[in-house]
Length: 386
Ligand SMILES: Cc1cc2nc3c(=O)[nH]c(=O)nc-3n(C[C@H](O)[C@H](O)[C@H](O)COP(=O)(O)OP(=O)(O)OC[C@H]3O[C@@H](n4cnc5c(N)ncnc54)[C@H](O)[C@@H]3O)c2cc1C
Image (cartoon, rainbow, N blue to C red; front, side, top):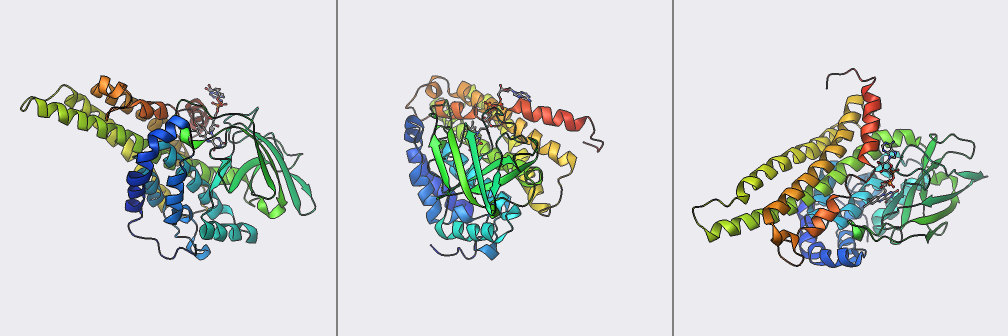
């Protein structure tokens, strides 16, 4: 595959088509067997979508975050696990595109576009959990080479990824908060699987634990401190793209509920079925969630890259994560109440089991309590008007 050229204007439609024709038909089996949605990722590769966020000077499209979010949404309408894989991959590419400035990291991005490489993330660490801004493992240096060993309890699609972006302490003498982000890739990368991934939801993300061993040139370490990468890119982009996965999951559940209510209405023309009012209520929550997610994406695209994120915006981006993940569970629970047994039963056109199980992953993906804790700290000193 060669450089991508100009971004197609119908990127979102292409993703929706892949969602409808490929991810959707496979979704139940991907969930049941907790298997990697290989056919969907191959289709995204064939469309060049894995390189979408790479800047044009490196062969990508320099796609905006709102457009990238649309690709995630188009897949997520049909398979939330596949959409989460795409969201996590786009997130890694965004970090590389904005903070990977040296020759090695720029060459990697060219390679990523050419070969549509899939990039995973290892921020969570044994003994630290989801505390993003703390690492125990440390980069060791020997001349121009770096070495890293990390116990990573969750790496989504770790076994299928072509590279992993990993957080670690800058040196063995650095305190836990002095972190860097490091690109690890074969042949210097060895992942030994240490646990299974048999979870309630997001089963197709295939996210078991690994012992990660990496060595390679020192230029694999991104030069910006991870503190800057996290606040300027990783936190905003993760909350916005995860938000698109959850929004699509909510939209998909609502589509089932609407179809159920319309079916009930056809049975008794002229009489609004009881679920119609419940559906209208659930839609108001959906529109709140949509404004949260899309508004944050637009604000991100308008802010120049590399500019510090004001504290008020950092608080809003954390609120987006907590708010959207909470609204998601509420919306999907309401659609289950609307569809009743038809939604509770597996194998019906209105089955909502997978949606409900996936929805509960959202609040845990970096625990909402941790995020509220961060906002609580910022609000102690924040002075701008909310
Ligand atoms: C579908 C999915 C995919 C994932 N993919 C990846 C991936 O690719 N790479 C990766 O690195 N990680 C990944 N993760 C992990 C994720 O990002 C979080 O780091 C992880 O879910 C946190 O795990 P935890 O709940 O065990 O840990 P913690 O966040 O440590 O939470 C454990 C418990 O402690 C409580 N707690 C701990 N500290 C605090 C605090 N300060 N304030 C309030 N409560 C606290 C929480 O309430 C919770 O009950 C994924 C998670 C999911 C669900």
